[in-house]
Length: 151
Ligand code: ASC
Image (cartoon, rainbow, N blue to C red; front, side, top):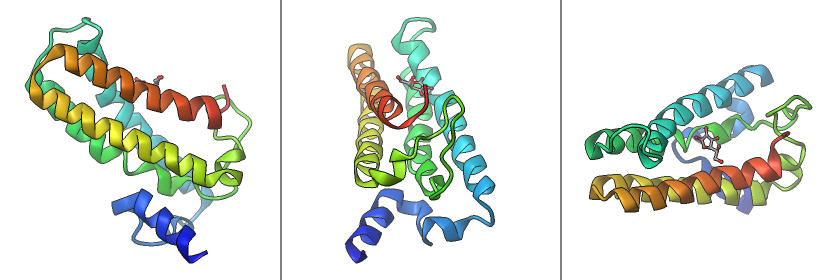
């Protein structure tokens, strides 16, 4: 139990000054919080994707600024996965987020590591490296979606 708690605190990082449930008044607040965090993260990740996919010109400074926001945002959603907040609607977390929490937390950590690499690639100013890092980061998003999110 103690080891689990330490692992959870490590993964949630900044957001984990308190056990997850204690950070929110109501379960709905936790759901709102994690959705908001993902919304902001996706907006900034998407701006980098537009460059990686050639829809907008590559601008290393803009990519870096966006990636730095993604790095911060990537730490936030996980405290919002309070037990009992699964759902059946499209995009909602499945119950295995909690029954396989260690695997879920590993996926979260993998994504957090990939977006740190994305920020480094953005700083490097090389579009091919940015494309590769973006692909890896997107893959780490998708892997959790495939395992833990309702299609
Ligand atoms: C995005 C976004 C996600 C991921 C995912 C990658 O831009 O909003 O959730 O990439 O689609 O497969």
